[in-house]
Image 1 (cartoon, rainbow, N blue to C red):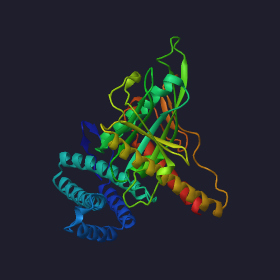
Image 2 (cartoon, rainbow, N blue to C red):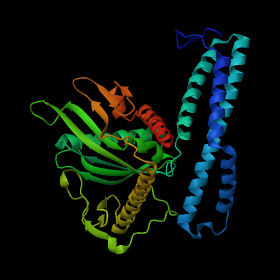
Image 3 (cartoon, rainbow, N blue to C red):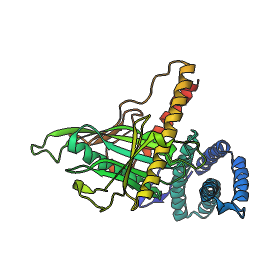
Image 4 (cartoon, one colour):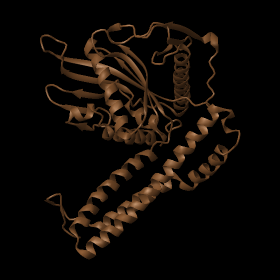
Length: 382
C-alpha cells in the first residue's frame, strides 16, 4: 500500500492489488450473467441476416435487425473495453510503484474510481431481465391534483428526464405536448431511443409529489401538487398487436401551443381512442396528419402491449396466491420548502441537492429503484 498525493490533497491509503482483484471479480460476475458466448452467437446470426441482399425489401424488419445487431455489438464492446481498462490500470499501478511516480499513482486512483462506476452501471444493466426491459421507452407525464402548480411540476419532470437522457447521450423525440392555460403542461409524451431505456426508466413510473412555496400564489403559501409518470416499451414490428378498425375512434384537430394558441392552420393533430379500454393517445408534433396518426398508433399499440402483459402477470399472480402490490400511490417526494430534499418512498434513497435532481441527476434513484424491484421480484418468486 502506498500513500499518494492527488489534486493537492493527501488521499487515504489504497490497496491497489486488492482493489484490482475486486474489479476483476465484479467483472467476471457480470460477464457470466451477460453470457458473452450467447451474445456473440446472436451477433453472428444477426450479421448474416443484415448481410442479406434483400434485407431492405422489408424496411421495418431491416430496422429491427440492424438495431438489435447494433445493441448487441455495443454490449460486447462495452464489456471488452472494461476488461482492457482493468488490464491497463494494473500496468499503470506497477509502473507507478516501480518508479515512485506520484502522478501515475494519482492517475491510477482516478481511473480506479471511474472503472468502479462503469462496472456499477453495467451491473445494474444485468438486473434488467424483464420481457421488454431492453426496449426503447415511451414516457408520458400528466399533471395531477394541484392546479397550475401541478402543470408546472409536470413540465419540471419532463425537463428532468430530458436532461437525464441528454447527460447519457440518449436521443429523445417529443411526440406530443398539451400545454396548460396559465403555465406548464397538462401532459407530454416523448421517446427515449436507447437500449434498455424501458427497463431503466420503468422504475420511474408512478405518482410524484412536489411540496414548495407556490410561485403562482399571491400570498406565498406552501402548495402540494402531483404528477403521474407512465413508462411503456416501444412497440416493435415483430410484436403481434392487431387492433380492428372498429375499435378505434379517430379525431383530428389543430395543434396548439402555450396558452392554447393555434400553431397550425390545418387539422394535422390526431387523437386515437381505443374504445374497449378507453385508452387515448394524442399526437401533434409532426407536420402531417398521416405522420401523427402513425406515431399515435405506435404508442397505442405499445400501451396495449403493456396492458396485455399486465393481464398475463395478474393471472400468474392469481395462480401463485396473494402477493401484495409493491407500488404505492406516491413513489417519490420533491420537497423544496421548508427544507430541501428528494426522497424515494420505496427505496428510502434521498438527496438534499434538489436542484441537481431536477436538472437530471437521477441515476442514484434509478439504480436504487432497479435493485429494489429486483429484490421484490426475487422475494415473490421464492
